[in-house]
Amino acid sequence: LGVYVVYNWCLHPLSSVPGPLVARLGFPFWFSWQAWKRNCGPALKALHDLYGDTVRVGPNSVSTIDLDAVRTIYAHGSQYKKSNIYSAYRKQGPVPNIFSQRDVSIHNEQRRELAPVFNKASIVKLEEYIEPCITMLTDQLDRILQQTPRPTSPVNLSSWLHFFTMDAIGEIAFGQDFSLLRDGTDTNGLLAGTATGLRLTSIASTLPWPYPFSSMPKSLLFMLMSLFAKHSSLVVFKKSAEIVYKRYNPAQNITHRKEEVREDMIGQFMKLRYKSTGEKWSRDHVQIETLNLMAAGPDSTAAALSVFFHNILTSPRVYDQLQAEIDTAVEDGLQFPVTYAQASKLEYLQACVKESLRVLPITGMILDRVVPEASDGLIVKIGKSSYDSPSERMVRLPEGINVGACPFVFQRSKSIFGEDAEVFRPERWLEASPEELTALERWIITWGLGSRTCLGKGIAEMAISKVLPTLLWRY
Image 1 (cartoon, rainbow, N blue to C red):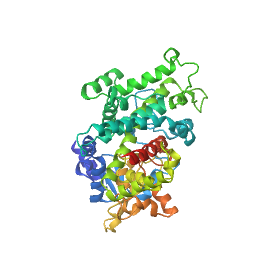
Image 2: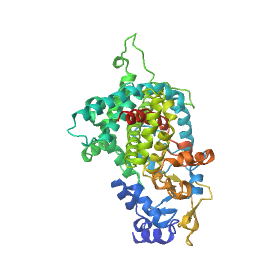
Image 3: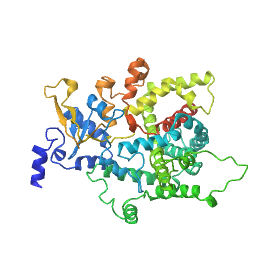
Image 4: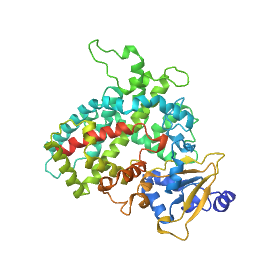
């Protein structure tokens, strides 16, 4: 242990990179503790404020906001593959889902296979299926408001937004909702199970060995998860398996002849073919991506909606201007339900959405990548470059080092977004020239960057754009 500590403190390739003492001694506990507290983003921001552009957060891990380094790491065609931490997000199955796939060439092939399901034309065809969920959401909120004893009674809007997104993903992906809005509660514990799974994987991803029990038999792994989690994520596994089973079992998937069969996302998954062989996707592969949709889609979209309302409700000036835009649009003939195309033309609304995701992104983790083998390494800045600190210097990170940017920290960088980078100010998106706007949009890394940009980004943006005008106009 003594040799290990001395090596990490004095001889390790990251020994010159500043950071918390426990990380510089070669232990992962600092980041794991922040993940346990759900505090990674703010904690990393405090480290960068203290130490500068690049900090060491673990035995082999670095967080950076150095723009040149970030540009290199996440460029299209980059050979910086995802680090081993993404193994924690691999759902049990024969192949990784597209999010946890680390091999660059395999990921590119999977992305090309999935592209027809997630392109804009396909998304536009699905948007009508969200509209009943919007109606159900407003009906339930109306009911609650009518029953509240006084106008100032609180309403847990975030919970209802989570109900909405889970039912919406059910409608567009699986051809059925999950009854959360209708029942007014977390039916079958899907949201609670998702939260458990995401928290477990977030903590596991901070360890050098993301799931030391990954080789355990699946039944033992599920038993441990059930024992130590208040709300087991098993329910999400079971629900996704049930959906796929019904689709592949004709006896369980009977439709009337006159009934129109909806072309939902799982139906499109079942038609996909492997680029390499031309054969249809296996049932296991379909189930893995189905589970990926259920586990990631509703939670991230609901989080984006929740932080949007937090930001506008704590910024009265912004809220008033946003309401004025909606009112004017309605006077000019805006009809409900609003289409995705119509919502995209509400400039101040879209600026508020972008700014909200900038200052409070939906992930506080580092988007970790590995410095590739047979490379010259990665040059990063050490020190507070924004203050022209004399301590600023360049350090070369050798191959095999985990390095990446945290959206919560990077998107508050003053060198990119200005001196008021930590302030929620949607006007920055309207004041920018076309060239500046392109640069600003490029560095919103909430949904990832380059070839690893989240495929579900378009679905989330469509759901957000459709529901917000209705809520803002109605309430």
